[in-house]
Amino acid sequence: MKKFSVTLFVVLGIVGLACINPALSSQKKLSGTECLAPAGAGGGWDFTCRVPAAQLMQKLDLIDGSMKVVNMSGSGGGKAFSHVVATRNTDEKLIVAASAATATRLAQKVYGDYKADDVRWVGALGMDYGVIVVRKNAPYKTLDDLVEQLKTNPRKNPIVGASSKGGWDHLKALLIAKEAGITNLRSINYIPFDNGGKALLEVVAGRAAAFTGDSSEIIGQLQAGEVRVLAVLSDKRIPALGDAKTAKEQGYDVVGGNWRAFYAPAGISDEAYDYWVSTVKAVAGSPEWGELREKNGLAEFTSFGKDFDDFVREQIENVAEISMELGIIKK
Image 1 (cartoon, rainbow, N blue to C red):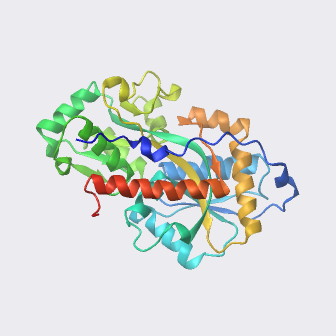
Image 2 (cartoon, rainbow, N blue to C red):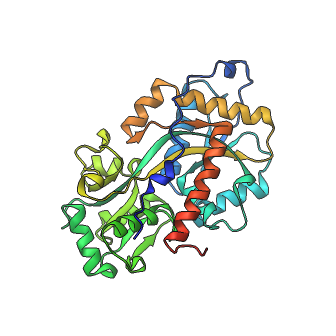
Image 3 (cartoon, rainbow, N blue to C red):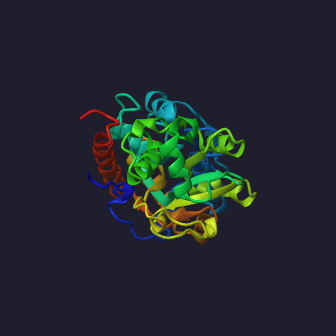
């Protein structure tokens, strides 16, 4: 049987960390800017809007004044995507938080007939590696413990995440299960929520066995001592997660990174698009972001403009292929 690895989600290679673009200083700074987070507070998209965008773009004097953050949950980001395409296609003051989950849903047609061409892909500034997390007093001490329970009684031990069924968070759980030799992947009881914060609270409250999400989504609960990390889906351990072991260390060859990025409306001018690309580059190259990125469990990863657009399109193709192999979408 073919062995799968979500390393395919990051196949294009990491673009070198960008220096602050000197051309940005000659561009007129936009005022009244807005970042749209396609989910509720507490998840990865919310973090992407509030920290590298609203917080650092103002602090680094890259925008004129403050940036408004708006949360719009629904349809795994589809409500926000539709809102941008249908009603704000020429809004040059708007950027939207995006991630590998966005590409996954476009690949799986979760957003209906919408496609990559319907927006402009601005840039990525970090890699948020996947995690499998349980509550602090859960009976599962290792990833093997959890997997054994999923084998013996999968319906009784639900796994929760912020993506829809078949989405990015669900895929991570399925790939772990497949590595463990579970052949009936439909037996895994996965329950989706509209953001990582809500899903994680289900685990803390004892209503779910485990949370499948991203590193940045769990930092607060981890530091508060409410959860334990059973596995990190990275090639090496992440300092912000303490002594949490990787899945590979425990015999599961699954690596999955969720890039954190932005897109903009498709109808904006090239000048406005270049402004946002330069602004995101400047944030990515700043020492302030480097410190916050590491503090929040993100790894270094950057890609901008045309390179990022190419990257996203290849990601969508890869996800569609994997989804068909796993039977999530039809060939």
